[in-house]
Length: 130
Image (cartoon, rainbow, N blue to C red; front, side, top):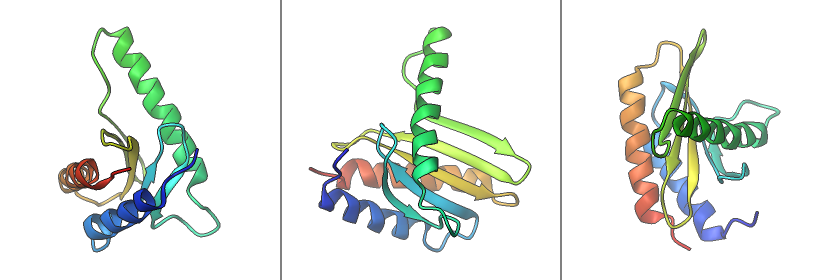
């Protein structure tokens, strides 16, 4: 999948603006719906985010399947908690559709993280243009 340069640039700027000073956030990553990294911030050493992007694609596909099975329309967000924190996957409807992935630290405030995800999603919807 070829990602236009202006999309990568805007995505990097938005991740930095929204999550750059957000200490609760361990990793913020933007992926294509087919599982490729658009931009990432805070990815652990020796990783490039590719596996997370691929998993985000699969997780959102699974969420859509579950929604369909229970008779619900669409799937906007998937959130799951681990012993070490929370992972959030959010669909971003924009001219260049994508998935925002966020890893929040264990003692992070989930409500604040969800607000930031909404803010980033809104920014991306209005700024990611082809």
